[in-house]
Image 1 (cartoon, one colour):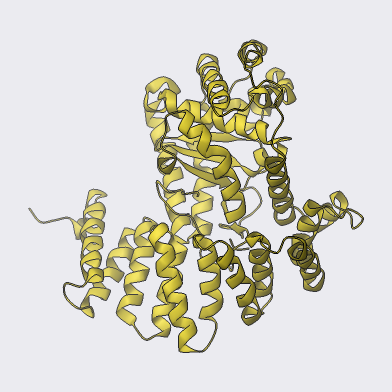
Image 2 (cartoon, one colour):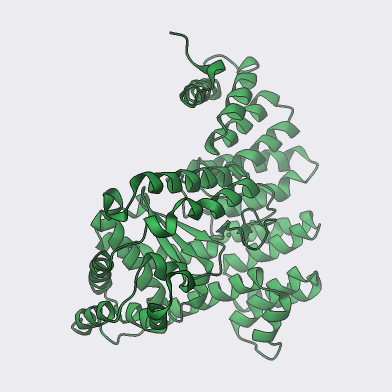
Length: 465
């Protein structure tokens, strides 16, 4: 599956090698179900960004510095790490009944960032915490570079380094974050009632043993007192009882349908969204389910019905392009990919999707256009390993071997593979014009990679005294 930033961008970009086009990208999708992976999808990322940005601003945070990641895990969970990274499980998105429930959880996580508790030792053993972050960080870096399988396995195993126990907040800390969340929601003209509803929905978790609780409630201990305290604050808000905007409800429902289409079995999708259901969400989910079931004709019929009703929705064209591309009809995927990009010209994953299709064409102009698209996308997501990988393919088709090696070096560098990055950067330099921007950047990669390798005890690369 291709494209599911926001940016593991602190690491700033997210993508996956081996994913074909761009509607939902499961990074490391060949993994067993128990392994976690990151998901990229422009539509869902846009929805989360629009839900989140006002809350971050209310918290006094720069939204450009807070990165949101979608974790492919059906368990209910959300957490933050140093570096202002917010991770949301697909299970959380799918179990949120309303946008305000999801926004409430996001506001709560923003409260943890604003409270600064991540930077202090109140989370417990800092050595264990550091080990967990190191493991997660390596997984993230590998994923960004395109090494989805390895990265997801590392990320999935990070909890064994103490994530659940070490990041477990005290009830006092949780109550503080609750109060912050209520304040952020009120400042943005929204009610904190959704967060209360979310907690009430899972109040039974309070009586479960630690091992039986959802990961979210292991690291965010729930209590009746905590809920009651939050209710007192929320009830005083002038926005109490204010419903979600219809547009937000629609966007969440479409995101949930899309996720279910890709992440659940076609049989279960068809059971929840039978053919008699003509809603937009049902047609969306069925389109993906038909595609996953290798019924391209039915998949295209469903997505075309949505395109007919919403001719200016870029995400429907993107999905159609993906389905055609991954079904071996690369040339046919170009037109809908072009249309998606026309409707949303600033989307890096859309540019990547179109570039991938163009690279399969034999003519020189298609290759040149693909390279231009990839370079443009890299202006926004310079650490996106997938973009660097496909750029190396484009340069390779043009016979520009030095630039192709340089692009591979960038992909490896952004993924944390210093050995490979240094090797390809050195090889690229040999055939580059001295002093060119790429030559200078390759030289930087060599120096940084060699220094990092030396710091890890790689004697071969340790600078001589």
